[in-house]
Length: 344
Image (tube, rainbow, N blue to C red; front, top):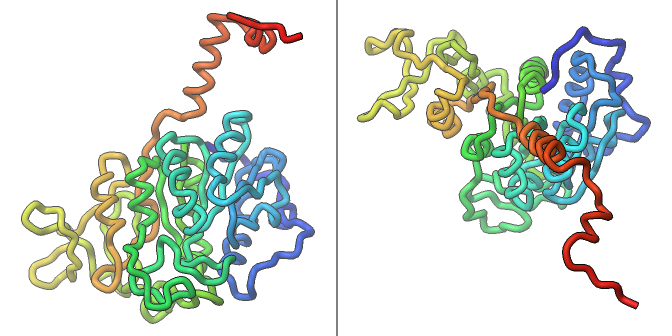
């Protein structure tokens, strides 16, 4: 967790490096980088206390472009390295940057345990629904039927939903934003930074070379009012140009999401679901995570914000208890304890 302090004299320029930013022209990663560099100084944290950790992929070049400490690790293993950093020095502000392939394919097991352990790390997962760095193979989030270099007849895999995955893995803070929604992204990042524990943020991001337009229906000024629903704690889930549409729970057991129009067929705003981002709303959060086009708008915002005990706090409590009971560690004494042999 980051305690928001009075902003220090850091600026976006202070967090830029002398490295050439090497993403394809027009890549959504540029917008994310600019927003993060603009946002981080507002935390009032010295850049020497910031660490960015990444795995493999286009998104994983991120640490090179942040004038902070950083690790560019190996495919899927960023959660393990980030966990080690946070355990070794809990005072550091640790951010992990990954992509849908890096995090959810080879790194799926690692990200699952990072979420359930509730390490105080902020995860930014860029989702462009494709493998970009390795030139256009389908990823775990690619839609069924997607034709790529590795699936010329269309993928038959059922896509993984990152928000549903994070909810199932018991992440305490889960959110979604879009690369072109800078103000929304900045607000989500601020909430993630303030959260005490693991924060998982999915950022819908465009790969204009290998999967251009994957999220155009959420970005087009003419359509996005009807294709996006913004989740806000304590507010009804309404959308549309005039806020005339909403999400109601119906069906036989009252847990089936329905799109309704306020003022039509007797529907009033009282019928619209009012969202609660706390732990009690976990089941509802999962229902919302399943809302997908063309029948439903895509939710963005904070799906869950619930605090749980920190993993690193538990580990350090055990270490302290062991030292209090047995004294400081002695590696030489440990090696020579019990049965030993001297080889001549």
